Length: 110
Image (cartoon, rainbow, N blue to C red; front, top):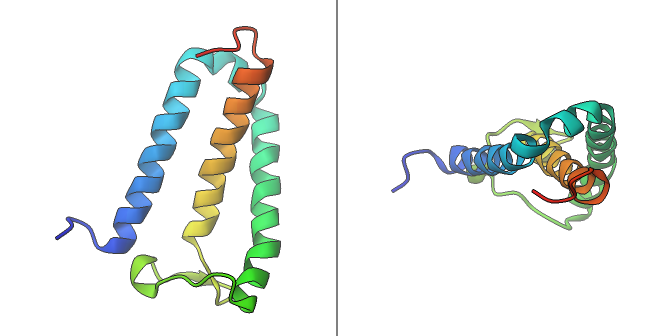
């Protein structure tokens, strides 16, 4: 048996993975990433907007179904759990940071 209800376990894993990836990237490249924070925020904003437009369509078509026992129970558009917004923010932010570090930073390595 888990220490957390299933919804909190998935959320804890998402937040934990996000913290680990961001900590690795920001520990060595913090100044560079801070100078490019607007790019990171734009990427997150576009990803959130894309999610808000496309996720309800996919949910309505039945392309995916969320188990109500594994989400917090806060729904947007009756098809999209609110954790999806946090998930896409974590993933898009980590992807933007990694792309900036590995492709555009002066070091181009961790």
